[in-house]
Amino acid sequence: MHIAQRIQNMEPSATLEMAQKSRELKSQGIDIISLSLGEPDFDTPDYIKEAGINAIKNNFSKYPPVAGYMELREAIVNKFKRDNNLDFKPSQVVVSTGAKQSLANIFLSVLDEGDEVIVFAPYWVTYYEQIKLAQGVPVVIQSDISTDFKIDIEDLKNAITAKTKLIIYSSPCNPSGTVFTKDDLEEIAKVVSKHPEITIISDEIYELINFDGKHESIAQFDYIKEQVVIVNGISKGFAMTGWRLGYIAAPQWLADACIKAQGQITSGTSTISQKAATEAISNSPDKVKYMLDEFKERKKLVVEGFNAIEGVECNNPSGAFYVFPDVSSFFGKSYEGKTINNASELTLFILEQGKVALVTGEAFGSDTTIRISYAASKENLIEAIKRIKNALSLLN
Image 1 (tube, rainbow, N blue to C red):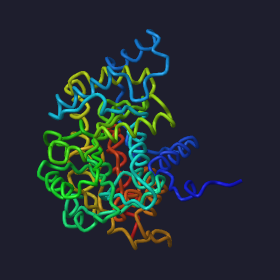
Image 2 (image 1 turned 135 degrees about the vertical axis):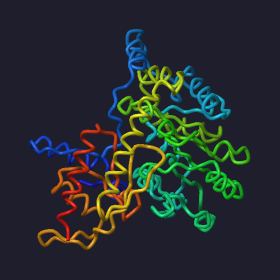
Image 3 (image 1 turned 30 degrees about the vertical axis):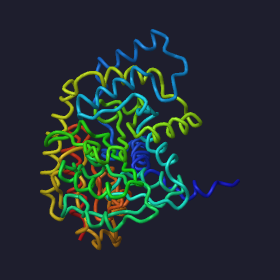
Image 4 (image 1 turned 180 degrees about the vertical axis):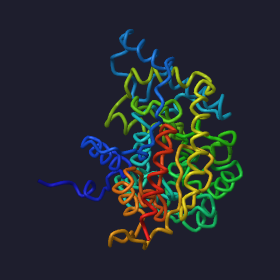
């Protein structure tokens, strides 16, 4: 049977693949600690669950508008004003089945074959593959731990060509936890403003998990606001990954195009999820601050734990719930005649010898690193660090 070339060319999600391996090993009775998925381990708050339950009781079970209920789109507009001092109209907001679909809508709406998308590395695994799926060409700008995983602005200037249609980054960043400051974003905005044909995708899904200060959006700079599309959602900040709801706020032309694309793919997002999301977004973010406080404590534990392991270099990220240590000092080392050549081989070694599931940095465009999610209990994190340390000590 024939499989389309576009699917053959697509890499499976490394995060989901490692999570699946973890589940398979656990089903065999093997004690695996999985730190591979970007999923809060908190339950969805009760006040949000009640809104979903009420939606079921009140028979919100018919097709919703493709772009989302007006009540939710207005709540999102109000959220942007309340939290970010940004002005949008409801018509500029499109609600989708997860931020992942929001991204797919954008790529399918903007890219023609051969169009280029500048991607800041490290990047979320899905960016690269969705760009390819839309027949675009990813152009990756590298960074590393020495710059806190922030790109050199000269590299951005040099990467722009006549074929560049989009630029994409996340802040707070998955996988590095890096947060761009207002000054960082202004530097990027000044470059983008010289290229009015380019749209920049600002992935802000981790907005509420920011440890060091106020979240900054590149859309705050009026001179490029019509070139910016914000992607956000409810999964990370509200512990609602399974509710599957994301959204964009975009220039009207792009919002209209995304509605057109979505109308032929999924149509509107789950009505129950929309009602729950309306409750989540309408309330003050302070109601879920307890999650941020707990993540901050876990981050301290994990950063200190990994920096205590000889050969591991771990910076102190300002957001999200990941650390992204450089582990290149272990490349070339061996155990029982098997040499570790790269980060992918190291993560498999840690899974086999330490029984801890992590994700290789190669999946995120960074070949010297591994990603560790600390969206897990402190007890599991302490045990995982111990296991990883013991496994790495076997290499020489």
